[in-house]
Image (cartoon, rainbow, N blue to C red; front, side):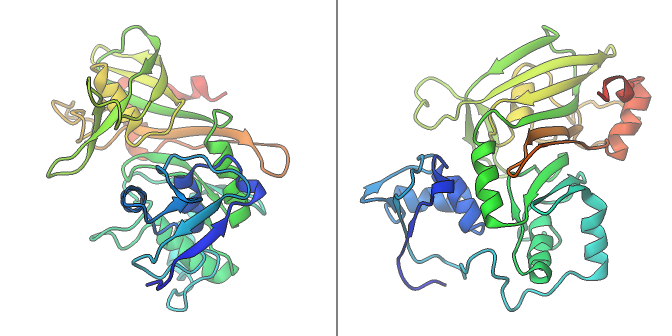
Length: 325
């Protein structure tokens, strides 16, 4: 546990970054709930004032970081008790790699594989990155996240400076993400934009997101998704989803909001009355990502579908090769 208040100056390459993104880069152990508590109680401040996690930083600003309830050495200095990856862990990590260069990895995360650990989760992507950092001398950092049951593309920065540059990109609409999903029912119209602010609804079996209601504007998060039906049967549709914002469970909550929950989604009703020959797993896949490389050129990567979605596509007669371009 850190025992003293420390102050950090916002660097030029962090100009415009949100405070919560800054913490993800510098202190990846601080989750959003913890950061929200620290800012709400005034323990984290920017300059002399209290701020919210979405506060935009500017070059030269002073960030006050209080003592934190864990060892918070910089993420690029592996802890002494972190061991290098085993051969099996290294094979697991490399099996996910779709693209690698000297600055970043682009992975194809399997459905059911957690990005971060929990009480009952011992093998997770963040843990693999810690072990990889022991080998590389600098721990790679998550640039964004996917739900445990969502498969597909996730971007990893090999160094903190790269994570900061990518963090600024991901805070804009420059990064183009395309998800594929199979949903219950047929969205109408066949193409559209869902512009519905979301709010977290807590329950005994986990958090969910729902459309905000009148009087909840202070706590709501704006959320916008574009969707397009690519093919359909009588009971289900294959849709392309393009999030213009990056809220928790955004795609899942938005598709449920318009009455077509994602097939197999046990949080938003997509697992009710499923066809017998369809796997009871979430049918949501981060298919493609495209963004300017922080050094030069463009990163454009497509992730193959997971096995359970391939089986469902074959069962429904959907042909993914029609849209490979």
